Image (cartoon, rainbow, N blue to C red; front, top):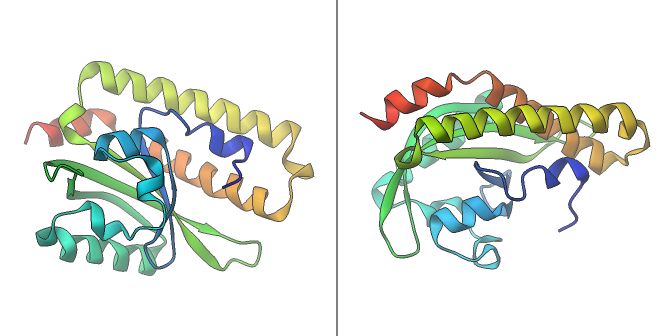
Length: 180
C-alpha cells in the first residue's frame, strides 16, 4: 500500500496504529501493532479486527464499532487484545474517522495503547512522538498540502484529526488505568 509522507510518521511509532475500512477489515498497520500482537504485518492485513480480541471481547469490540459509526470517533475504550500465541493484554482504543473528499466514510485510524507497557518513560516517549508528528504534519501542510492528490489529502486530514485527538489525551490517566 502506498504510504504518504503523513503516514510515514507512523511506521516505527511507539503507538500501536491500524487503519480499518468501514466494515472492520484491517487495511494497514504499523510495526508496533504487528509486534505487540506477535504477527508479521502481512498476516494482519485483510483480517477482521475481531481476530485480535478473545471471543469474550467481541461484544465490546462490536459496541466500539457502533460508537464509531454513530459519532465518528471512539475514545478510551478498554478492550482485551489477543496475541498470536493466545496470550492477552489490556488495551485502550482510540479511533477517528477517515473520509474521502465527498465526506464519505472510508474507515478509521485507530490507536491502541498496550496498558501493560505504560511507564513514565513510555509516557515521555509518547509525548515526544506526538510533538514530532505534529511538527511533521505542520511541515507537510505548509510545504506540500496544496500539491497533494485527493487521496493523499484525505490521508493527511485523517491523520491530523487522529493526532489532534491523541494530543488531547491525559497520558498520566493512562498510567492510572494501567494500574487498575
